[in-house]
Image 1 (cartoon, rainbow, N blue to C red):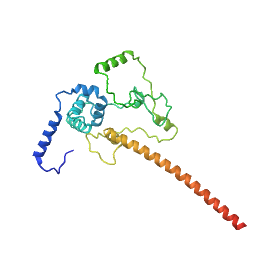
Image 2 (image 1 turned 60 degrees about the vertical axis):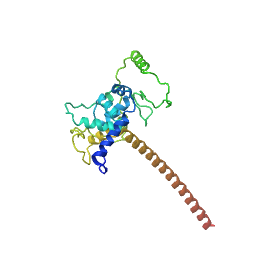
Image 3 (image 1 turned 120 degrees about the horizontal axis):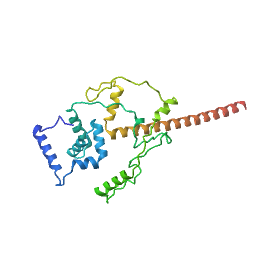
Image 4 (image 1 turned 180 degrees about the horizontal axis):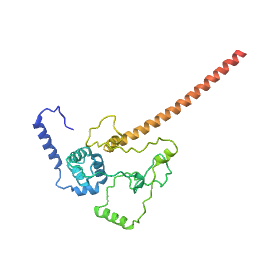
Length: 254
């Protein structure tokens, strides 16, 4: 983000960029782009997802130039993507026909096909390993895992929403065969089409989306608890009023 109200003009901007280059040269050790691509795969995947361009090498190069800043790396990759011509279009794919390496349902414990943890840090101790394995040892572990792996046929994993639709718990809609909107070429207009909303959510900041999801879930839980408390208080108040009416009626009859 560039700031318009900056005093100093071109001279201040040049000094800022010079200082940036000065701070980047704090060591003589070279950070290889291949190391970023292969060792920081989760970070590279996030930059590619938010930039809307599958290019692991360029994503790693953008991260190196941006000193690890995800936002700046996404800006760089998006700017580069805007200079490319579009030669191909991907075909729609069904998630139930893909080979899943991770499949988690937070709402339902038992789902058809089971839940697949995959590679995750969720159940690690989350303690810093000061004696981390070397690159040679990690590569040896990977080769051993690949050698011991057995081929597994692809199993169809139906969506949980299909069960909910069958039970009538969520609405069903007919397939939308219209041409999807391309948010990278067309200006986003409101009310936005469903395809435009999904593309925008996919390219949004992952941390922000995760935070909004957690906050929405927390708000829903608070509303549910408030409704339960309100119902209990109303029942309690009703019982008190009924008791008072009965006592008043017995006094008058006496």
